[in-house]
Amino acid sequence: MHFGNECEQIMKKNIALVTGGYSDEAVISYKSAETIYRHIDRDRYNVYYIDICHKGWFYKKNEEEYFPVNKNDFSVTVGKDKIVFDGVFIGMHGTPGEDGKLQGYFDMLNIPYTGCGAAVSALTFNKRYAVCVAGQSGIPVAASVLLRRDNVAEKRELLKQLHYPVFVKPNNGGSSIGMSKVKEAHSGLEEALQKAFREDEEVLVEEMIPGREFTVGVYRYKGKITVLPLTEIRAHSSQDFFDYEAKYGGKSTEVTPADTDEAVAEKLRQTARSLYEIFNCRGVVRIDFILHESKQIPYMLEINTVPGQSEASIIPQQVKAAGLTLTEFYGMLLEELFQ
Image 1: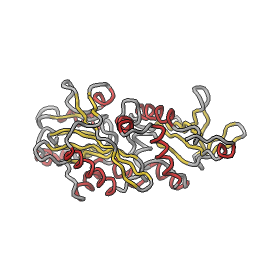
Image 2: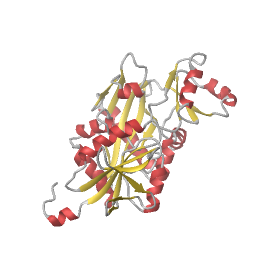
Image 3: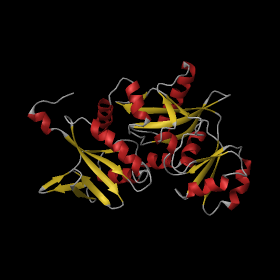
Image 4: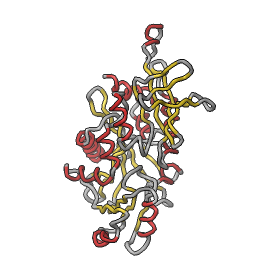
């Protein structure tokens, strides 16, 4: 859609594209932001690239020009002009953009933003809390044990009760960094725990569910919850599971739309819709599942409330398979801010 006359040009809204972050996932955030920045419709929105990093909060006008963000009202001053924002597109994985912190900040400033609210973001960012809520709501989840640095010794007996193989992963954060697969209790568990604890103070040890892995994009637009075409994740034979290397190092194959029968696809879609409603999600989320090999029912792994948008990411693949352009899709997400 193009807005041709000067009156409509004046009506363009200022959008802050927020990226970066304070975790190791910042590198992924910048890749997502590149895609989002290229595809937001400039006929409808003025887009400002906001980098939040350990050095500070900055509006990046170009490679040479950076302007500090006033955190009191989330504004930027360029020369004599003060720029305020009508809305925020969150393109940040990890803290503080995926765990509810930025969402709470924008709530206090009454600035609308893409994606889930503060409470939902905080809840789903914590893998243990998310699977507990899903499990209590009747959604199948894997058995797991939550460890903290100070209680590993006392949880040893619980760990022995898990059926191996297990996945060991940071409890808070993305789905790929710091993750390991341990095939036997007496081999590799300690190394896996150390790896995960380098990323987080809490570690989730979770039984592996045998079966096919699917990931499902879901979004709400004008009150309607829509499930995007499904994707099946197939790790290459040299790769045991879908970790960072598989996801971003070309060691997996994502099949979109997934090659599966309609009965299985409908089970996944219905479960994804249910989870979207149970968690009161907004915007687009990506929900990861294992389809249990013998039971043929979906087990929820986790919910990603700021799914990746890089060229290697799954949501852009699903959007294309749905017959939409990214410009159309991002426009729909932004429209929801101003309803």
